[in-house]
Length: 131
Ligand code: C2G
Image (cartoon, rainbow, N blue to C red; front, side, top):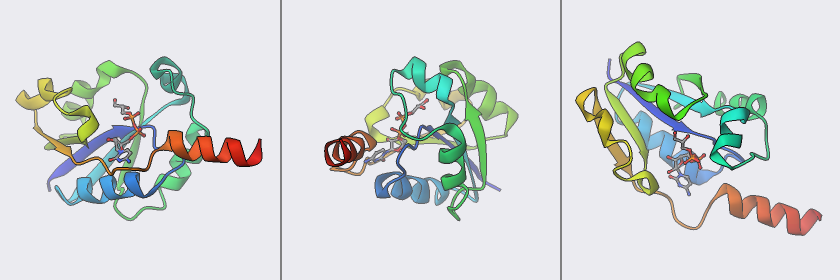
């Protein structure tokens, strides 16, 4: 069984995220999502609109997601790849090259980011429309 992992906040889950997750899952037979915790988001400087529990609940509705683990630090990726016997690490292309250091442990794949959709844009529209 080819195991795939990807990381992210997945706030205001949108089709860019879903396309990424579908393509990540298609790289193998099992997809683990390491979901950024609310505390980790604070260190990323991007407070999410929805909290971890809500973002988790939405991801569990996706057939392409088989497992969700918390992402609490930048440094946990090597441990996660080893602990979960990961074969493929993947991220959107906005992270191109940033995780090549994992290539001694697993295959590293960057998938094309979906243009013209982002959580930031969605939150901006929400804010301007609801005040
Ligand atoms: N993504 C995408 N297309 C978009 C928006 C996002 O393909 N229009 C991808 C990103 O490239 C990323 C994933 O969806 O691979 C999740 O995006 P975010 O929730 O914004 O996650 P990010 O802030 O990039 O956190 O340790 C890595 C970090 O946790 C990644």
